[in-house]
Image (cartoon, helix red, strand yellow):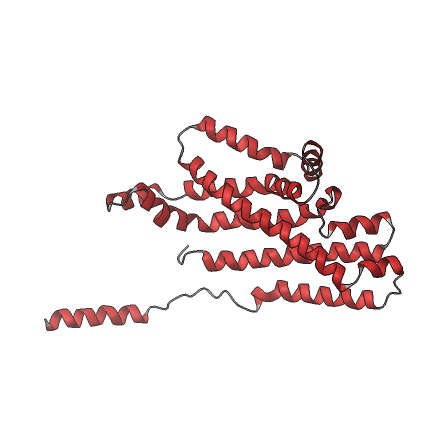
Length: 263
């Protein structure tokens, strides 16, 4: 009994002496992107405050109008990304599990249409055959950004080592347990990378929603070009770029937090 206790204490002491590596997510380097974005926005605000705005520019460059357009832009981005996640992840899992290469090829070919077609083409074609407005822009965003999440889900599931799955099945796990407890946790980093790409795609493509009367910051960019009001154009373009940077940063932080330890 004394020998066993001594051995246990020795092993425990040895384990405690091994340094535990912890992932440091919230570091100063991690906050570089939001700091840069804040600096850019402050410089933009200072620049606009030094200008003598005419009546047209004043109707656009005010907090009420900017808040409305930013809200529309974020709504399009996040709702479209949520729909993509709800649709693409289950389909990607199903395709990764199906033995039929023909089915996989057909589904991937259909999903690739959105990426192969220019974003403006997807939006305008949907508006012609269907209607204009928010819903049409939402569907166009889903079609355009669907492929990265679908493909990354398939790759994430397929890259799980076969020996790991065999070991899990040997321990008595059912196929659904292997999927939810082994494969999906290991595929999380790849799936989140696809969602991150889709989010950034949606931010950029949402600017085109203005062509079908769906709002967003694209209104400022287009109106700035048409009316030759370059402060309006610059503010709209900078806001879109800053939103893309912030969303990409948030997605990167979420990816680090949700990735299981040891991966």
